[in-house]
Image (tube, rainbow, N blue to C red; front, side, top):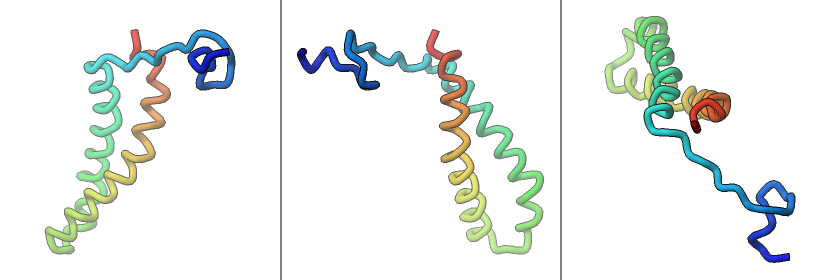
Length: 86
C-alpha cells in the first residue's frame, strides 16, 4: 500500500483535501467573535482600568483580548467550519 493511500485519520483510501473556508465567511466568523469581545472590554473592563496609566491599560486590554481570542476563535471556527466551506 503506498503512502498516498493512508489518510490522516488512519483509515485507508483516497486522501481528501480539506477545503479552506471562503474568505468572506471566515471574516464573518472572526467578526462574530471579535466584536462582542471588544464591546465587553470597552463597556465593562475599560472603566475599571481608568485609574491605571494608559500604556499599562493598553497592555492589559490587548493581553486580555489575545487570551480570549486564542481560546474563543478556534472554538467558533470549528463550530462554523461545516457552514463556511460551501
